[in-house]
Length: 200
Image (cartoon, rainbow, N blue to C red):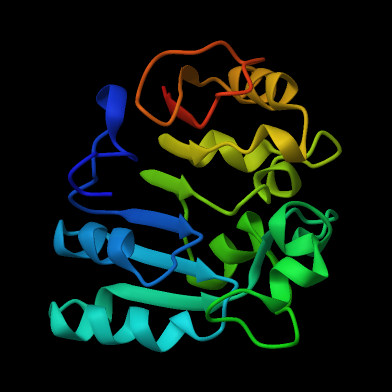
């Protein structure tokens, strides 16, 4: 992640203050990077066993007070994250390395912003294995995107209509650069689409 700079290609920058939201925090590498850079971080991770690892990594790097950890499924306000993407498949969820038998509760970005008193997000990183099609679903009220400065999005075309999702981001005011896993530019309809880098 660090060496390939997978989340900050094409001109995105890590904020030195304000808020970073990390949807799909895993063991906390991106969250801790953001916190060490000076940001406050809301780290959302569905696999319950990763929460302690995030907190331990934050403690080791002396930024525990900067990171708020939420064990939850990133979702829309009306679109459940448990029904879209990798976690919607029971066998895949059961095979997850750090999950438990029960999926956690849904959490939307507006709910997270309200809970953490976040008025603006400097950078939103989203790597939720197809769950982006729940968070950014067509039927959702996406007005909260107006309060996001940058968005680094891992895209999983197998789980939704990627061109339509990219079009919604454009309608929200983002200029978007689309890349494959190796960083090469690709069109929205490409099966190789892996990342969308969005800024204003």
